[in-house]
Image: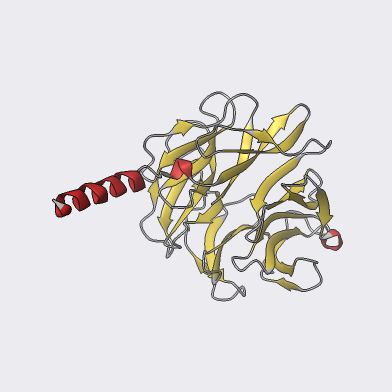
Length: 287
């Protein structure tokens, strides 16, 4: 009898654990067109419980959660960097001395910021930098001609993915060590690759490519092998973002008529729209 009761208890535990799906984990931050400006919002991973975080008169784009606390890094329409304290709603400009920057992402250990810095003296030129939170300690990781942008940390902080290319020609996907050394090119298709994002286990990279004729979400192993196309909608699917458990991908699509947040399985199936109403973009998923 005891064995039977124990078996029933274990079965209940397995069922209960199985119910803890990706869409019950954490909080999603995103940019939503609110009146005349893009403002920061949050929502539950199932798309419910949306809440507006900011209301100041400026566009706020590309939010990224701090690894240490409940803050969001973002940039405004002038490529100035800010940090938002979600609890107090305080918005503070940071890294003023670095000029025009974008794509802020805190290192996995929370000690540094990875970002893109634009070279205003040259056309279509940007580099990837690693800086301290106060901007005083700076390391330039790339110095190629053209544009280096869209950096993404690996979960263990030892590597980063990035996009590199000259001007408006084909931009390829690369991976390199966290100090900028040992760069390896993962794509060579003369298409536009964009917005790489490491999986939570560091084994895969989701990214955007227009190699099939329009912008779609692609997935490949972190060593560049096994590329596969996840979306094939004849419009724009962009900005992939992993669920904390690595089982789902959040992304932006205009398949409903305007840009909204969607979620899908890793094989591209079961795509579901999460946000409705005003346009929504730039998802960031905090566990």
